[in-house]
Length: 465
Image (cartoon, rainbow, N blue to C red; front, side, top):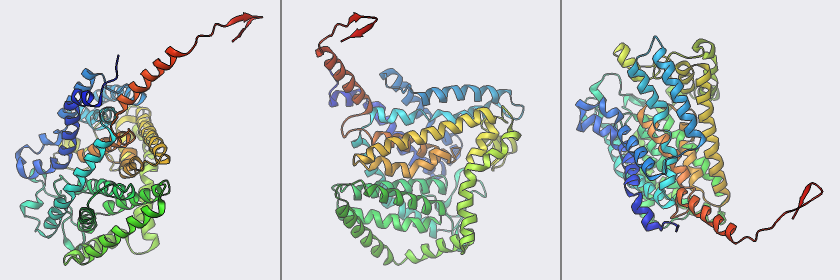
């Protein structure tokens, strides 16, 4: 049996790869569909990517590339126990249980389907899409920043009150084409990762285009009035700086990167409206974070560490089976109380423990820790080989995978897609993980077929070759 050529392989999995691209595009335009195009269908459009995910799984099963690793088997086992505990809970309902299963488990296997059918070149093509969209997205963000709250640009899904967040100096926090500002923040963090990877890997790209993207990104950070976006971009910058150490021509990479970043900063500083965004972001930072070192410790560092430690305080309260999967989501609050908010906890690991109980909850947290470690290990292996893209992408989505909130659909989409892109970026330029496995399998068969057989001779109870 001969190996599939790249052309035949591409044709065989073309529909599957198009479905993954559609999943990515829907992440970006989901908010626009809910806010402006089909506002009356805002609630059903909340799960618009779920049929696409099910279609991807069906196609991958028919093509024989659905993942069958320990992570996927663990997801299936945890989903089964979560469903049983959910329908037996006196607090939950079947619809809340199904939605909770969707949040925790439905999209996770997609993380392993993506690298099976996508190559490194596909990841870079997707990165180009993110960079091109960055320019109009920043313009929309600035327009939303200056528009009044009642303007149609600042509409929110379902026209519900209290969903639009205010930032510094009374300005609204922009959401772009996303439903809420956290989706816009996750998008620009990924843009930062792709932008810095292009600079570090010295890809052929127009200098004017790179400067335009850099200026758009630098403008987007203060005009978002979002601390999480600024901190996320800072984490990506640290990851990119660390990855420079593993490039052969380190001095050349650093010089080129610094030159372009210097031009970007100078160009953004001369924009007449840039100071408005900086002033609003500064006011938001001071009011929410403070000005002293102790204030920063409490509002940023302590809040970050609580995301990992607070959950264990609820183990005894949650019991063995928990309150029911999905009970900590906004959908459960809406169905039970007809209002938005958190019934259990805003912290992700605390929500998991309260929903699933001490046994399944800790197992699910362990699965997410193991998944993060697996991605980190694969990215670091590639980093030592000079491939910096997986590590930089992991710096953009790592915290979302580890303990980020998955109840918001956009966060869930960026977490699963980001993990898949990290693994796909580990593939060769025009070879998927599935092709690599087949190539190694047939290479081993050829080697074994040409090895001379050696007959062992029994002598005194042992074998001598």
